Image (cartoon, rainbow, N blue to C red):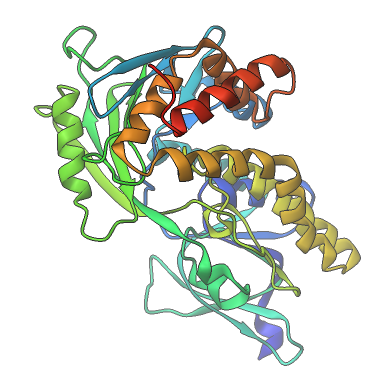
Length: 399
């Protein structure tokens, strides 16, 4: 009976940016891969992708639905700060189409796609992983396949991650919600702009996160997030649509999902499974940015899995988190501190928006965001920003 079960080098659970990238990477490495994804789920997401992602992951122009040339930051008082991008742009993608593009690219690379609902992980008599799932076209059927290695990329609060990886159930998250609305034509909306991301720091929009209005070409993403129980996300989004003069435009779809804001303490089970994407908590604090970090964690999880398949060393799996944190841990720490200090109340949010008016802050912010690393040059600018932050925090700034 056991011999009748099909064996794959890798089973990837979850077909978002992390899982699809992992499946493509493994397939290109010559491994047999099964990509399991439950169709119909679209993650609420602003959809911003930096130039480094577009370049390194070879994203075609057809997937970029809008190009933003800057951001407008809005304070509780109504104070506005524009942060233009001096060079280049930030691309915007629509997750409904972008995720499917990535899944199809994985299939074209050689991965086998299966629309299915993942049920559980079992073990055979030799301790090998047996993935149990139900195909979408036949939900009453139970299918079992053997996997030499498993990549869990099935989102925040992944039951697979929680069952297999110690501490995965401790990852904190906000609940994100957005509405995709028909966007006004140029000049039709007094406040909305098709080449600008609007970011709202206001307790009435989110008591512990922020709200956004991001252009997506013919549509716009209007959303927010919070971990405060009882806070009305739908009410907050309605206020955002009103503030952006988008209240009268058609709502195309609504989506909500948990969004982690801190990496899980461990990404592997010490045996044959590794996490990626939201399941690993690979989402930037403060900004909630996840697409780039999902894809890079998926790629590195696949590379670790490929090494594990070739050598049998479980250190190849535990090394995935170490690699990620070495490359991005410092940025995550800085963003986590920013969220901790500046998102606490509206008085601090007001100060944070004022700091965003500083040209050094804007330049270093865009440089860091677009290439995903802390800018090491210009120590004087970093010192200036540090002391300005400190002055605002203790209430000494006259601005």
